[in-house]
Length: 307
Image (cartoon, rainbow, N blue to C red):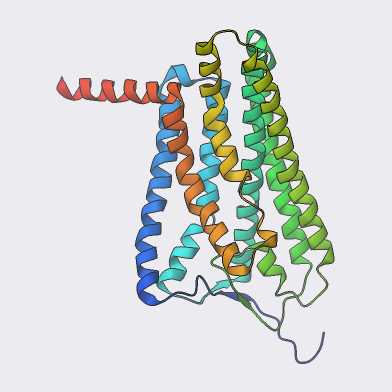
C-alpha cells in the first residue's frame, strides 16, 4: 500500500444534502412514517396472535413478512434520522458493515417470503382441496426458515467480500446509510468479484423470485378464469390481490443500478419508508380475514369497556 494512503476506521454519511429547514421537516415526517410502520405491522402481528381464525399457514407467512418489513425499515431509518439532525455524521466501520449486513439480510428475506406467499396462494387457489396436505405446518415452517437462512447467508457472503477489501483515501458515503454499492466505491482495490456476486445475487433474489411469482400468478389466472360463476372469480381474485399489490410495490420498482445517485437515494427512501408502511395497509384493506379479525378484536374491546 502506498505511503500516501490512509486507512480509515469510520465513514461519513453525507445524507440527503438538503437545507437545515428541509431536513428538520423531513425528520418530523419520517419519524411519523417510522411510527406508522411499527404500528401497522404491529397490528398485523397482534391480530394474528390474538385471533385463532388467523392461525393458518397463510397468516404465518404474513406475520413473518410483517417482521421482515419492520426489521428492513429499522435497519436503515434510525441512522438516517440521526443524519437529518446532524448532517455528515461519522459511522464506525464496524457499524457500517453491520448495517449493510442487516439491510441486505432483511431485503433478501423479504423477497424470498414474497415467493413463498405466492406459492401459498397458488396452492390455495389451484389445489384448494389438497391445500392442508401440500402446505402443512411443517412445510410452512421449513419454507419460512429457509427464507430467513438464505437471506442471512447471502448477506454474509456480501459482507465477507467487503471485509477483504482495504479502504483508504476518500471516506465519504454519498447516501443516508451504508448502501453496498456506495461502500464499494471507497475501496482502494479491485471490486470486480464483489460486483459479480452482487449481479448474481440480484438475478437470484430479484429476477428469480419475480419469475416464480409471475409463473404462480399465471397458473392462478388460468384457474380463476375456469371458474364458472362471476362471484367465485371475484372471491378468488380478491384473495390474492393484496399479495400481488405488495409484490408489485417491492419487486416492480426498477433496479437502482441504472439510476443516477440522487435517484438511487429516492428509490432507497421508497423502499425504506413507504413500502413497509403501505404493506399492512394493503393487507388490511384487501384481506377479508384481517378486516374480520380487526372488527372482532375491536368489538371485544368495546364490549369489555362497556361492562
